Length: 601
Image (cartoon, rainbow, N blue to C red; front, side, top):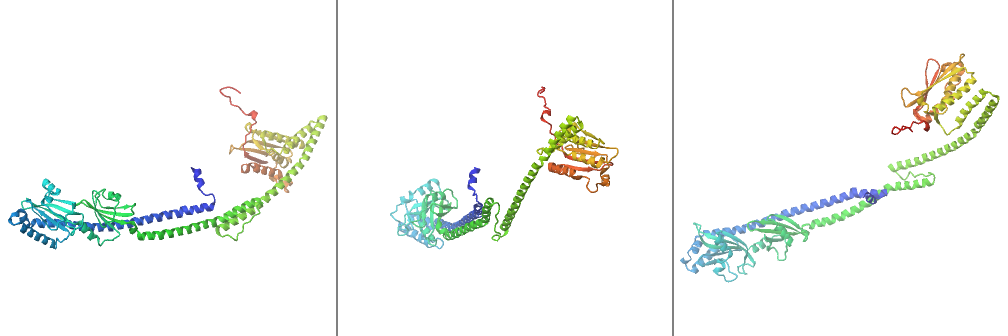
């Protein structure tokens, strides 16, 4: 997975910078703009829905007014004594007089200021086979048409006072009403003793009301009256359509709300009428709703894409301008390898950090050239030194051969002193010629020191004594070869050589008292000391001499700060101490092998 993601990451720096510009700046900016635009659309949609619901609430109140007119008309008819007398006692007058009186009552109701509504129609009937209407019927009516109506039959059976019928078939003459159905209130008429003396049907031409109310509404919006069963009872225009999905959404619950019909690109607002179990529905096309926003949207996205393209171009140019000096420097570095670092970058073309980087690059090239020249000079110098060392090995080898000749002459002449001197000097010369070994065991260093002391005792006629003291555990410690010899030579020449009664040299070797990880080698004499040596004519040269400086330098090269040569002041004589790490290296055949399971090996 990580490898696949790595393949998607650009390798060149300029493309990485460009990708960072796009992902960190452009992409979040685009997402934020789209989110803000959707928020604006939602806010506008909510605002339009609120306004639409205000219109639906006005329709709702207007329809409630129509329903209240029907109830008021019923109350006026029920309280009118003449109407009650005609329905209770139809035989008091003849049929024509009853019809004429009832027609007069209907006209008065229609002309009433409180009840004026030309689209309200009345029908009254008694229980003796008489009925009265305030309209011209669409077809010939009979008493049975009313008496056998399901609503009146149901009221008789249940004792209900009234019923609303929302889909009552229109019975009014087409010259008066062209609506297919009417909204009818079926009610029983009762006297003061709550006895039924007649029946009333008060119908409202709600389609006419609906059209008249919507004449002032915007023509680009569609209004519907939908029943709870999903039937469209009325619509503002014959060509207006409401999708089945929208009807299902509207009639799902008896609540008010709105819904966005994505398929038909419309905003559907609906308001529930609990008294009739109806829904007033308003449908607004989104093209109308967001007409101005769509125009702004096009302008916005055109501007956005232009700015985005400009931003991408500028980002790429910035990335290119930023990485171009680095690419140029990379090419120059490749040329520097091919041309032995003899490359310089022009500094006049750059500014700021790039200029500092260019100067640093040029300085680095100069330093590297100087370093290479110095290394080459040191290499030539090493070759010269190596040549001189090879040349210098001729004389020591000649001396060894001479010593061997002298040794055989001493053996033939049976002069043991000459033989021992030749053997001791041969050991010293052979060790000094072995340039491959810098560290030897302490016991070997002691043997070399004893060989040097033997030669010096012969020279000074055994006028001094030497005492060695060391612990057995340090005899295989590694020490620089010929490190004790310069100290012993210094003690003999400048310490005890001038003593009349001879002198004594103490050579002590062991672990340091302050640090058991350090090895200490001490050479002490009971001679005249450093101050006495200066008084005896040694003022022209320093006490330490070349040999001590040689020892110090070798300690520094081998052990860095862990090795040192120090002069320790004492009451009489001179004491020099060598300090170095305790490096134990026993020979393999002398190492102890632990037995396994009690067995010896």
